[in-house]
Length: 103
Image (cartoon, rainbow, N blue to C red):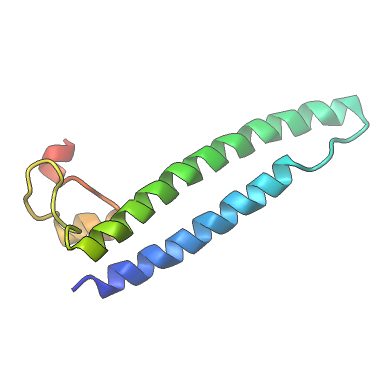
């Protein structure tokens, strides 16, 4: 029933894993010897750390959604048990709450 969602989530999982690996690599890069450039590099690192953390959180949600598909719980609100609308799942494929409970 949710084969297309499963496929989309698996693709999103690959993208997120790749993003986390690339950001980790960038964060481990050596700094410039120029102190002015080091300031910019440190600011960029802050952005990269935030991106990495956001990606890790999203990856956790994606993997949780994949487990819910496997267990047959996907598409049901974890709070009230009602069906999550397909429009909501299209917009946020790892949604755990229906729109009413999310509000």
